[in-house]
Image (cartoon, rainbow, N blue to C red; front, side):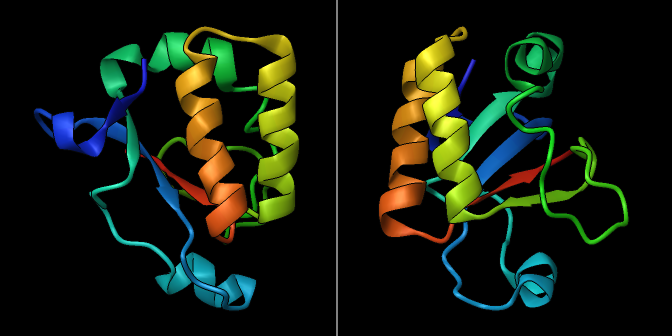
Length: 121
């Protein structure tokens, strides 16, 4: 389900990207990311249904630039380091499909960065 950016073919992907900035939330949401980072983790849009069935509940409450607090599959979603820690713990406990790859990636977001982004299509 999860593939490294280096194995990307085509352009229809959801992207998990490390937040490497220590800015305030508004600036992070506006300028804290770019697309197709080498260390990003991708999910093919073709796998979207299975992905959201397995992981949608864990990603329900991102920080967004909009008023809503629901995951936006078409926009920028940001998760703080604290949220990332909670998501990783839940995933490791529940063990959804492909969790090992995602849990390892999230561990790096906790240990080395300021959380992560889920960038929609």
